[in-house]
Length: 217
Ligand code: DX5
Ligand code: ZN
Image (cartoon, rainbow, N blue to C red; front, side):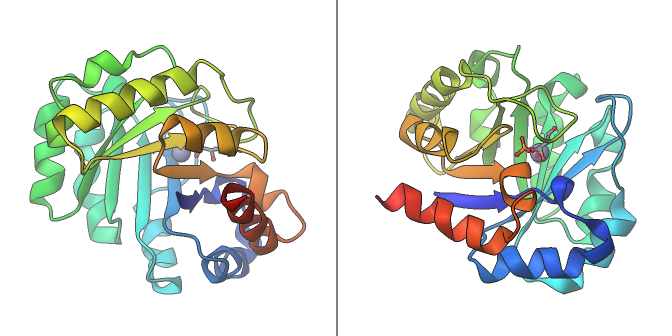
């Protein structure tokens, strides 16, 4: 299992320390939640912040675009240093075209599905994806409760990628904590995004190590 700490719940007044804590504890990706106040009701950051964070670590930047018209922004986030560009299938009428465009930019292409979107929506584009992101909360905010139905969707996604694109990673985002992480892992996820479960802890690095150890038991 890979761990992708979400900086949404980190304290940006001391972001370098927050990043070092999870990098030193063995994080695999840094998950960057981009919100535009339109696709989701919240606003976070744009390419400038991503570029400013880039020198702080060599870890892959996993940019999760929760924006309308994501095709307008992929290039700017790649230029800022993103290594994975994930956008929502609900946010664009031409997902396959954008997946191909993102790959042409030389980075990995991911597609995210909201809780109401069935895994079946991915059948005809899974071969164009490097990553599928199953949202296990409604996007927009950290600290929400895990939607249990997501476990069945992870199992469906695992079967789909096994059949059509075994190299595609399955990432899960929202409400992952010490209780839900083992369930997400058992259902077949490759990457766990975690925000509040890490950054609301007194020591996010120790928390990450504890959660990894939990999976090993
Ligand atoms: C929510 C974001 C998540 C968020 C998860 O829209 O996509 O990445 O940070 O936060 P937690 O882990 O607190 O549910
Ligand atoms: Zn996210």
